[in-house]
Image (cartoon, rainbow, N blue to C red; front, side):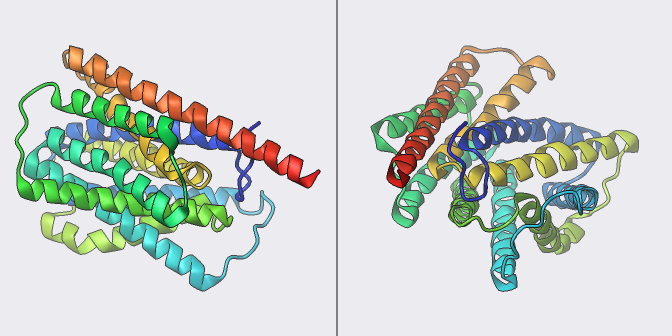
Amino acid sequence: MSHPSAVGLPVSRGLFYLVVAGAAWGTAGAAASLLYRASDIGPVSLSFWRYVGGLALLLGVHALRHGRRAPRPAEPLRRKVRRVLATGIGLTVFQTAYFAAVQETGLAVGTVVTLGSGPVLIALGARLLLGERLGLGGLLAVGGALLGLAVLVLGGEGATVRPWGIALGVIAAAGYASITLMTRFWGRDGDGDPLSTTTWAFAVGALLLLPFGLLEGLVPQSADPARVVWLLVYVAAVPSALAYALYFAGAAVVRSATVSVIMLLEPVSAAAIAVLLLGEELTVPTVLGTLLMLVAVVGLAVAETRGASAARRLAAGTAG
């Protein structure tokens, strides 16, 4: 077993949680695409219902587990409020700016800018703010992952680059980087319960998006309302409630730069769904980009697990 963190979660399990979260996030794009085809729902309204549905599901989980687990040490209210607000705002900026970037400059460029800028900003922030170092192997893995992302997303159809869309993508990446770094920082001190953090961050996001959703139109019009409802339930349950709870748990115990690269499994998962379920053609760029990113993810995961084991041996030697 890997060295447990301050929050009591082994690093190996945290890596597994992140892999599942990244794969689950990759299904959100396909679900959103089907929703756009089946109704007139907009990106802000979709994000709003994603948060509201995820919040309802997580509140149900809270009710079911109440009294079934040992009580956690009480976290000071002021610190808890600060953490939840910061996480909720970061999530809202990340998701909304990303959808806006995709709308402005297209899926390919919006995805490359957001997910490509994220690891760079996170690696820089982790070095300056958290003192985490990637090392040569880690830098090569990040570079390989970014190259794989570019090949995967830009290797197909021609892409349209618009400056405002690029700016929105960088803003989205900054929001993503902030929540990753904050989660890692708080996880070092054992602050917060990942499930509780996700729940109240969703509540903050829903409140922030409500006025914009009202302007866009919250209730989608569709000739097949049952299909729309089931797709919304799926988006709220799997790539939202489940994926974000696992993400916050894993990101608290795994190095920030490693988290950012593992989360690049999202476009890999999306590409696989597009080929297997949506009938898109399997191209050479799809295969090459996917392989590059998977190699980078596996390499960093192995390095992370070895680092945790080395830290455990060092701690045992010091104690002895």
